[in-house]
Amino acid sequence: MSRIARDSFSSKFGVIAAAAGSAIGLGNIWKFPYITGVHGGAAFLFVYLGFILAIGLPIMLSELVIGRKSRRNSFGSFKKLVPKGLWKYVGVLGLGAAFFILSFYGVVAGWSVRYIFFAFTDAFKGSSAEITDFFNAFKTHPEKPLLYQLIFMLATGSVVVLGVNKGIEKVSKVLMPVLLILILILDVRAITLDGASEGLSFLFKPDFSKLSFEAILEALGHAFFSLSLGMGTLITYGSYINKKNDLVKTAIQVTVADTVVALLAGIAIIPAVFAFGLEPSAGPGLIFETLPNVFQTMAGGTFFSILFFLLLSIAALTSAISILEVVVAYFTEELKVKRKVATILATLLTTLLGVICSLSLGIYSDVTIFGKNFFELLEFISSNILLPLGGMLIALFIGWGLGKYKVFKEIAQGGKLDGRFLAIFMFLVKFLAPIAIFIVFLYGLGVFK
Ligand code: PHE
Image 1: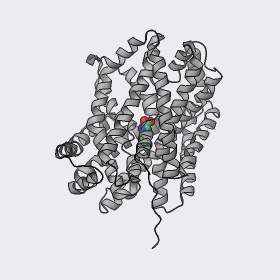
Image 2 (image 1 turned 180 degrees about the vertical axis):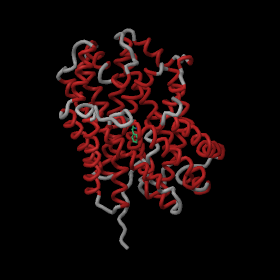
Image 3 (image 1 turned 90 degrees about the horizontal axis):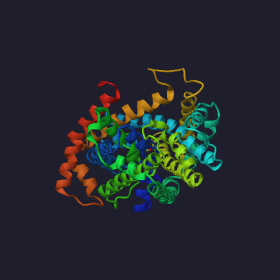
Image 4 (image 1 turned 135 degrees about the vertical axis):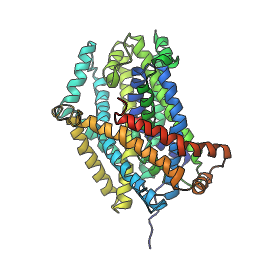
């Protein structure tokens, strides 16, 4: 029987760049600063950091173990490791989440690409209200956002079609350092503005009286989204990792990178917002409404706004690549189609779904299901239902399904076994993570409202 060698990452830096590229995305730069702003700053941040450590990190390691042990896509991996029973359907959930997330992700990423060009021509100028109207007119327009969504999705597909090593790894190795440089430049600009210190203390001095139950649960949900957990992204990437790599180290490095970039994004945005006397609590519009207002007043604003939207687009691209790869790996391995066919099909389907998302903000905004338009519905189902559910099942699979010795054996390959670490890890995946996620899940469904 002839066997085609499975594509894989070729270097440790490549693994980190690709996995951190997946984790660092719109979640860090668009969502993290605004939810921190809405939930009152530092106290929220500390809770988020606690969840990252106690739940995010162990589930990330779990996904990497499942992927590398099975060397399969997110569906095939469960099927291979435990063929009997219902575990393999965890992968199906993940595929659903991938389709949904990529479709609305492509829309927001498309806005970001458009804003690079708007920044070049200084298009967003005027009063706060004018800038908000400008954004609303753009995002609700029937065709204009579609063009940029399409450009973004084509870019995503063109990288994925080249494969893991020649496409994903190569591109991530270039883009991740660029991203880091861009964000550092923006950080230096933000903290040297007069009046920046108020923003820094908002970000780092906790006031726990501001912390609501809702904020705590939002922090947990965001830990999932931000680390790309719960839908098999890191199972898929894990399946391309060499047996010589230390999985524990990889999980730690990716988690640290994601968290540091979220903090750097907060530092780049929140002090600037305060320095110009604006509020950080604008919500989802913080980036497209409040920030352009900051840029138009700041010295060198045009230059920095171009850099900012470039940064946002790059971050979105490496994340979108990882979501598309989940679907493409499934199509090639389970449906046995060529990578090219799989990529075209997956890009086409998610783009079409994305078109409906985009139109649902404008001409179809009166079509609602459970009071949500299509964009909001997909975001809700994926972030609040599919990711937490997937994450909980992944933790349970490692904690109870696969068997402790198989888990330890996989971790030992390329790494060392530390008894205390393993005991804590098993406690977290067996009990703490599933229980905590179950609570978020109920919250996502609105049980506590
Ligand atoms: N982690 C990405 C971000 O922060 C989003 C993402 C979610 C990517 C799930 C892959 C899987 O934007």
